[in-house]
Length: 235
Image (cartoon, rainbow, N blue to C red; front, side, top):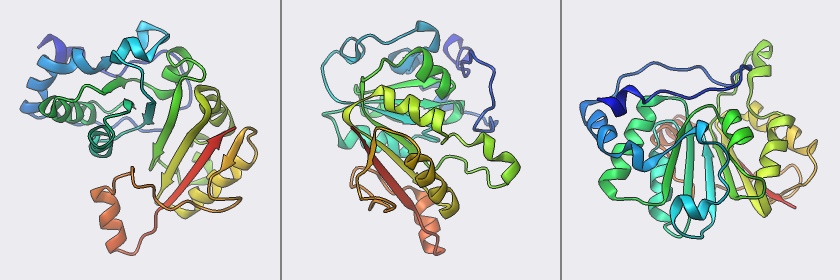
């Protein structure tokens, strides 16, 4: 079980985390899939900068990065539905990555790679400037309490990093099911230079067709909960 034993999140920098590292167990099927397929999907933080995505994927195609893909259902669906694009996911929750690898291997997907690592480390050490066509951040932890706001991933320094990694015309797509966090995101984006709100100033975007509706989101809709999409274009 060497592959499973090495299936741990990678870290470099000590910093305030924007997430709580959850515990969880992988199923036997996920473990078997990891033993066989993890090397085919894995990108390592310690391999350093990616100079060319074409070398990673074996072709030239638009690259989409998703930060915090959870259990991976929506990322898997997008990789299936957009075969003309290559997808890179970042997550720190091993069972979520295990589930994604298991299902991606079953489907024979070749346009998906995964970092099991901290997103800030990956952005700083692995992603080249102007190399991404879309960055996705869906339903990040809003850290509701004011004393915890410093843990929110959406802050000016983070958005500046995203802006540096996007190509001209590239898009930064956020979604949240907590309206105060959506309003906060708009405030942060207004303070960052180089981005244009696709829907117009202070306007939320309709959900793009490429973003699947998750089971969690469907349950929230039945309970009357809203979801807010924010889509920004890099100048």
